[in-house]
Length: 188
Image (cartoon, rainbow, N blue to C red; front, side):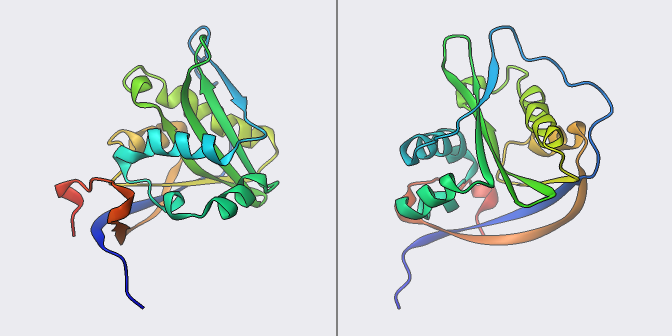
């Protein structure tokens, strides 16, 4: 079998865990902003969110997932999608929770739209995800980030109360057809 053309990226993935809710109260969202669950997220909406937020950070795995498989994932009762919305309804970010390993919940994806980065929303929005997990009665929350993510991702997770479990190097073969640019610093 012939493999498709790809670009190799080498990243360090850091796995994090939180075993109790944060002691300090969550910071408040800016006036007019809200976080809401998107109970019927369509494949098209999900792909738009994933591409808008993740293209700069090499989010590629879900881009390779066939529509039918992604639709089934989005319908799965353990998966939930949340949007960060501005007062005018414009989406500023999204996160995806995966409770399939209950009573532990994984934060599969978390990010801000390019126009929302640098506005002090990262920790506030992350705490909305964290607080939602603990509100559900979970006993643990996990997430991972990597050196392809925004440079403030890991410090923000740590500030929210996550602790590093382990870090390891991974090599990814990212299909060229996805059109993602692998930064020189990550090329293997």
